[in-house]
Length: 413
Image (tube, rainbow, N blue to C red; front, side):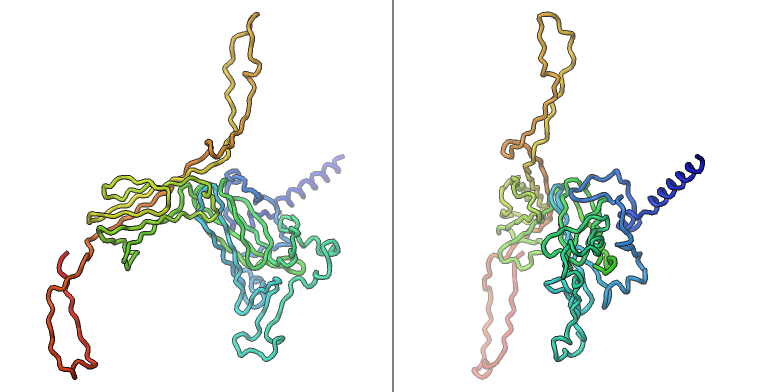
C-alpha cells in the first residue's frame, strides 16, 4: 500500500512540475512585464494570456539569439504597427501591421515571396534569371485539408486552435499574435494584417499593443519580427480646429486681420464612425465679449472688431444613443402580518426586469470634447493710396532693356 501511495505522489509531483514549466502567452508576449490578471475586463474575441503556449510549434527566441540571423533568407524582416488612436471610449480602435522585407523582396498576389536576383546590378537577359519565386505552399497544393493528415497538427495557432478555413487560407503564410490588456488575439495573413478592437471594456489612458509574427516552416513556425505601438483611450472627443481668413498667406501663425471674417472648421477624429448617429452641438466662445454661440454644424465664422490677443474656447458635445440597461425595481419594505379581511398584493415582492431601447426616447450618454486656442487680431491694410510719385526723365535709348526700381513706403499703423 505504501508503494502505491509513493507512486501516486511521484505522479502528482511530475504533473506539478510540468504545469510549472509550461509557457504561457504572458511569458511570450509581455516581454517580462507582468500585471495582475484580475484587473482586466474581457475583450470580445480575445483570450486570457494565462493560456498555454505551444513552444514546440512556435519557438520563443529572446533578443540577441543568433537564430534570428537565419530566420529569413536575404536579411532581417521588420514589422511596423500603426494605429488610428486616440479612440473615444466605446468606439473601435484599428491596428495595421505591415511587414517590411529585405531589399529586393516583395510579395506577389498569390502570397509567394519574389526575390530579385542581382537587383543592384544590370538586369539579366532572361526573365527566369531575374527573379526567384519562393512558393510557401507548394508541398500542400496537391492535397486538401482532409488528405494532408501529416500536416494537420501544424495548421493551428499557438494555443492549439485550428486555422479558419476561408478561401485561400493556405496562402496566409504568416501568423500574427497580438497582445494587450492581459489578453491575446491570433490571426493568419499575408504581409499585412488589420484588425479592430472595441474599447468599451478598456480603461482610459495609454496602453501598449504588441504583436509577434511567425512565418510558415516545414516542421514548425519561425519567429521573424516583433512590433509594438502605444494607443490612447479617452472619454474626451478627439478633435482639431482649423482657421482660415481670406488672403491669409500664413494660416499657421494664428494672426488675423480685424473686421474680416474668420472661418473656423472643426474636425472630429472618429475613424470608426462611432458618433454617426449622435446629436452633436458646437459651443463657441470667441473671447471678445461677443457671448456664447451654439451651432449644429462643424463650420462657423466670426468677425473680430477689436485688436488684441483673444482666447477661443470650443466645447463639442455629442449625445450618443445607447441601449437602455435593465431596470430592477426595489422591493417594498416588509409590512406587519395580514389580518383577516385584509388582502395583500402577491406581486409586490417579485423582481421585474425591463429593457427600454428607444433611441428617440431617452437612453443615451454624453461625451464632450474641448479646444482652447489663442489668436492675435491686428489692423490690416485696407487700401493703398499713391501720395507722392517722382518722374524720372529718360531718353528712348536708355528706356530699352533697362531696369526700374520702385520704392514703396507705408504710412500708418
